[in-house]
Length: 393
Ligand SMILES: *Cc1c(COP(=O)(O)O)cnc(C)c1O
Image (cartoon, rainbow, N blue to C red):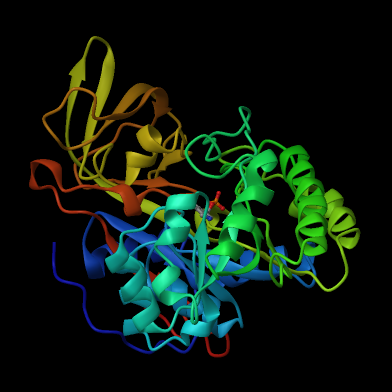
């Protein structure tokens, strides 16, 4: 795999998901690739803005912590959601105004808090009394969002099992924060990723509205912010859920919040997921028990790791024409038997060097890839970086 070359200006927009451009990018940068289309990032960001007017969108870096994506969001006027010192360092290296960032990991080491404060981040999340104590030395600078838990057994990843305080315990947590002299800016929640519908968001907004009002009556802090988290779903193969329709009940619920509450959200998957494709090459093939097995240079330990960790299924296709379709298996490169991407596919007869494309691979793919067996992670190639002249790679 040749090393990525330096950026070169190409003053035209390209469709990086079109076969001729995929082939050209692989010829130039090698394989495997993750092709990130910043134009699609902008489309996703703008669609969610339109679906949630007045809500500030903090892109959560976790699903795809890549500089080009982060910069695209900031160039759109967006904000960021950080959770680790590594993410703080990434935005710091890009010279991004820390006032655009919040830190939302509910459990932090003192060093993580210090690193974020040192970088200029001011707003943090806490969900329990022990975590509140960690902010006592910083009570003059740091402000807190208290994370409330809303269980969502229907979500693909129920994040409220691991984090958040029960709604019934929220007021006593806020009272404890006041005793410690901390500033409670507001509340946050995350109902779980890839939400099947907006029922949980709705319930959470309504409950948080009541909790905000109750905490304000007790004068437990400014309590003028509600962070409605992420979870906005995308389509994998099936038609994407309509984000305007998904958000319509949320808009109505947000309009009923106590007056002067600033609302923010932390979308990750919705922004990053549809914006990238994975491109892998056939390394070799074998016929086994009536099926063609194709061994690719990317797999479950690489960009397809989301099939394990994120329970996603990426639509895959071969960049080869052919009317004859044969029962096929796509396997990853490592020597581990679980490293199989898809079985029982009907594909044209492929050869070494043929390309396999996986769609909707921007979120929770490359981010959780490993280099098991020393197969390198895919090279990320960001295209259409700027909105105006659509400069290339
Ligand atoms: C992962 C995460 C997100 C992003 O969630 P999506 O479902 O990808 O939108 C946002 N906020 C927090 C705190 C997270 O942990």
